[in-house]
Length: 149
Image (cartoon, rainbow, N blue to C red; front, side, top):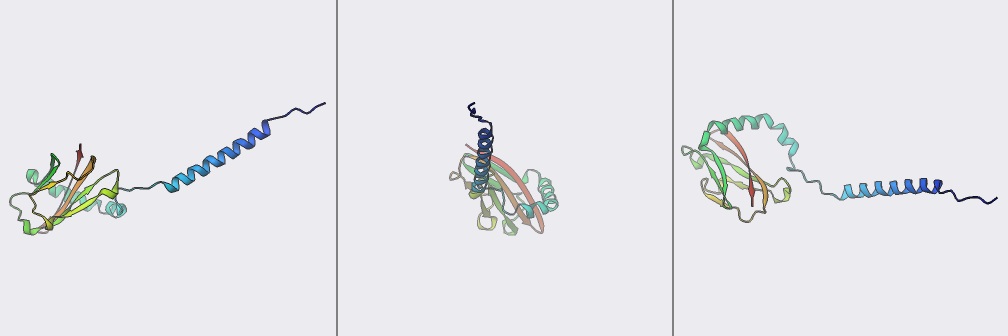
């Protein structure tokens, strides 16, 4: 009597080999992917959370005196009229949530506060601007998102 070909052992071995190749492929792809966190100092920022909440409430106490607005590829940062520009120290941070390589910072000491910033060079998409500044010993923080079309 002639022995019949049984595909079951080969099918089981083939399945294990295919599974091992798939797992190896997934591991290689995981190592090649670029892990892009919003901030490199994410954990330090998380520790400053309570302090930042206090700064946000300080900024809210200014009412409409502190404004961040984006219109026609221009960004306007306005401070209360009773603040003198010489006493302001801080920065504007522009974040691109989808790509941290596009983030940049503007030092408030290097520009006139109520000037308009031209943002026509920025890529289209969602941006977040954060202003963090100090005036006469009080710290203020405000964050606002905007979309460039």
